[in-house]
Image (cartoon, rainbow, N blue to C red):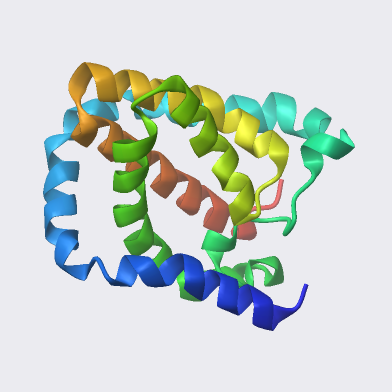
Length: 178
């Protein structure tokens, strides 16, 4: 894929979060307010691990489910397909972006079940495969449950923490190949 297009697409997805610099401190307070819900982090990470261990190989062989316009999540940076050194320079921006994007995802997409499904499938626009969007559905519905039960800050804190674990594991996987 043309790297110029990927860079433009990356900038278009990241630039709006740069307009939210003044909202960073309130987002961190929101996250702190929801810290008690991190007790569920093993559950969300466990769902993802079970998906990777038991399902991803099978789903990856089904053409319609393995379809992706890019092959990886553009949020990792426009050069993520280049390996570790294509990802590392973008990690600080990714973490900053997740602080803001995860908050708005929880605020807008947890109100109804339909919006939760839309949220999962919007990840396809970010370059992930269809089967990954399907794997996000149980997480989305759990975040919705938490949102309804404990509030936005709790769903947000758990969503952000889950994504940070994904980022750390993704980077670590470049160092440890199984």
